[in-house]
Amino acid sequence: MDIESLFSVKGKVVLVTGGAKGVGRMISEAFVQNGAKVYIASRDAAACNAACAELNALLSSSSSSSSSTKGSAIPLPADLSKPSDCQRLAAELTRRETKLHVLVNNSGATWGEAYDQFPDAAWTKLLTLNLQRVFTLTQLLTPLLEAAADLSSGGTTLDPARVIHIGSIDGIRVPVLPTYAYSASKAGLHHLSRHLAVELGPRGITSNTLACGPFPSKMMAATLESFGEDIKAANPLGRIGMPSDVGGACIFLASKAGAFVNGATITLDGGVVLQSKI
Image 1 (cartoon, one colour):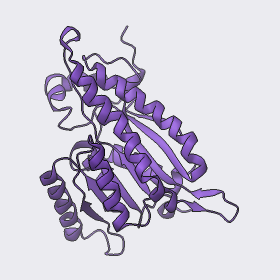
Image 2 (image 1 turned 90 degrees about the vertical axis):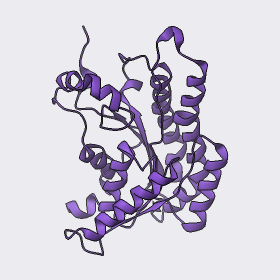
Image 3 (image 1 turned 45 degrees about the horizontal axis):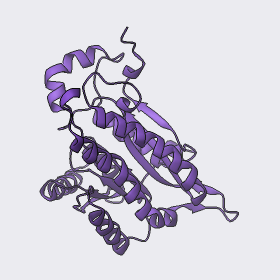
Image 4 (image 1 turned 90 degrees about the horizontal axis):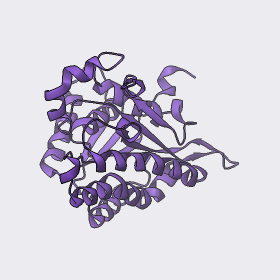
């Protein structure tokens, strides 16, 4: 049970939705640098292609990794708010691969607006992308995930396939900002993950959630610009998240070290969710 094999994701096939930017890009890079074959899905095709090119170039220029341990990044542009694009992505992945070891459901959106002006359209957009399409895509990719599960001769799952959902601490606490649809969608995602853990566990697939606090991303840019120092000061660790935080958490869940974790919601926030506002 050495560290290298315990936390290894080498050779695993991974799909990261929204993997071209922000937290998704951090996750993609962590898997690629540790030897996984990573498909990156993003609505922005140009960003998707650029991210893969940059990650592959980074590996080519790295002297710290041997060619046998290097992973790769492959673009699969798709607008995952659309059922047709979810179906197309699943069909294309099935054409290319016989197994999917890890699905990271990271694609998402937010919307902040005062209560009295909060539009109905925000609910439709966020509940569709942040919650409904997570179910849609997971359902479509279940056969590939089942094929990746490592089962013993007795049918016991030794190394399951993984579904990792990127949730939010705003799905646990009540946020200060008026992001009603976002917080509700993430709370729903956390519970959907638990429901999937029970359904998919017997099929050799685990389902877990990372409830993330603030990380540097396009989604958080305006908030961090206005309140960044206050956010850091309110955190017991005095900072916001770094790429190694979310990348490391995903590597843990996707490796043998996390093989027995199922249905968990792991807060990845430095402890800020524990702080009382009174």
